[in-house]
Image 1: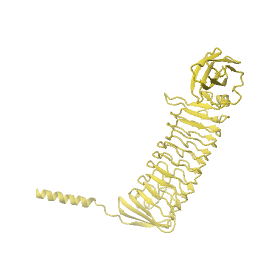
Image 2: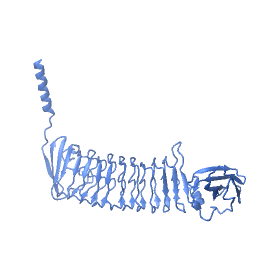
Image 3: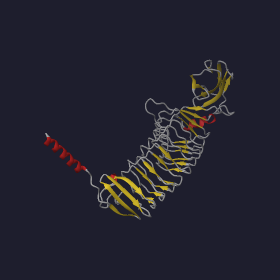
Image 4: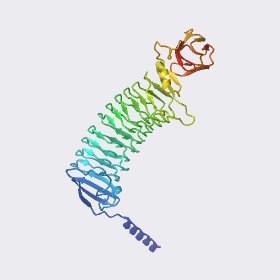
Length: 418
């Protein structure tokens, strides 16, 4: 029994000794205009960068001392990276796919190159210096960042810079930022909120696409340009578009399944392809311009089975123009009719008005249908085959909108119920 126990202990010590990792031979050299040193155990390496100068700007992932160049692929094993004061930049692809968890960059660093930290999935934290001026394309794409503050000193931000950061829950942007770059936060879908700088004038292509955890979004008043799919597939339920935007581009609100209502500003002159496709919760669209925008043929595509089209409210005095622009949709006039009571200039007469019970209609053509709406645009009453009168006794006292349909035209009248 004693021999067996001693044998087990000896075997255990042998195995423990066998699995203990030996430190690698240090790897060092010159990298661009700076120096590097790699030390540590095979699966827990430390990379140190120092010197007075710049790292090289690679255009792909190859030819770095820790990937290729005779040392094999050490990237995933590099768990710690230190960059000393004096280093001027983080070069393109410098730390792509490395296994670090956090890093603090010195004040001497002014630029971060394209793909510099791309695919560093374990990196949850980075401290960016207040001297930083530029962050390149894909710089933090597919990283594990949880929170990040982009310094006020940054004047250039690349496309896809913080895209697919699946753990990101907080980002602070420079207050002087004017353009949100294409695909900037695309599919960083854990982000619950974001404050866009008041200085912003443009939101790039798919810049905020796929932010499904975003419960609300405020577009700054100065924004006049939205890119393709800029706000698509995100989680907000309400949104206000600022006056000055002239185009709602293709796929702008595509698959925004929680969006319930939207007001289209007077400045909008074009609505693009599938701009409102698969917005299953959208119940209200309100147009403000007296001149209808140009609509792409498929600006609002077929919904999933069981969904309903939104109520579309348009300026009362422009009802006919909107009907000509989008003839396949039922339109509701707003409550802002001018002295021209009949949209189609038909000589319609209604009496008595105010009315207690029965309202009589007299006009140039036979009435095929009459509808009564309240001031919020809700349909209260619809009658067909009108024989010169309509019974309003079921309505409460107040102001209503009467829509009178003929075979080829529509007229609108304001009715007061006593």
